[in-house]
Length: 217
Image (cartoon, rainbow, N blue to C red; front, side, top):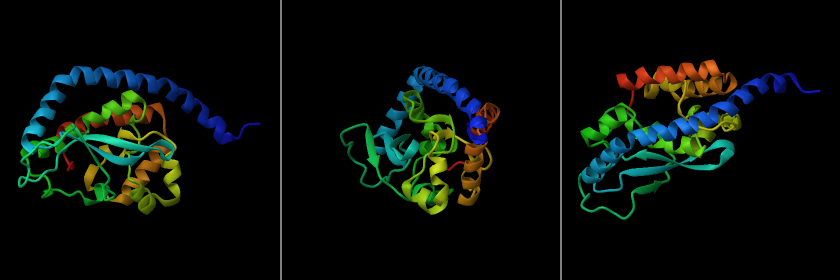
């Protein structure tokens, strides 16, 4: 006889088996449509930074698998940026994660970079991960191993039971101004109450949150 929790989770699992292929196809379609814009942003960043336009940060994916999360580069120094190293992606291991982020970050030296961060344009390459089935559109954001250990503790396996997402509950309810405690609570709520209704609500609320550009840095 199945347990009540297993029985209750079955409809959600079944719905997600339908959502995931739709996410992958939809993300691929968006990437194709946005290809000229993404190419322009890549070229502009490469010219301004004299470095690779894409960076891949090491994060923890579903079930603890390593995930190199793609983003447009938004941090570079004006001094010493006199050459373009080989490759279009720089792989970075940085355990500080978002806790080192703040408004008016001195590491963000370009108006284009600030614009990309404010309106989450730097996150668009992560649609590639959704198309590959490594991420979801809506789920807790991918975290570093250090963040999971320090702020999530014994709840980390629960967070890692689902694919990480591009947007989530705290991304539409305060973004960067929220504390880690608030983010943790919202991430756990999202995982424990995952439903089609909550998924669509967060996806819909993400659009105005991004267009307003509030609390994003």
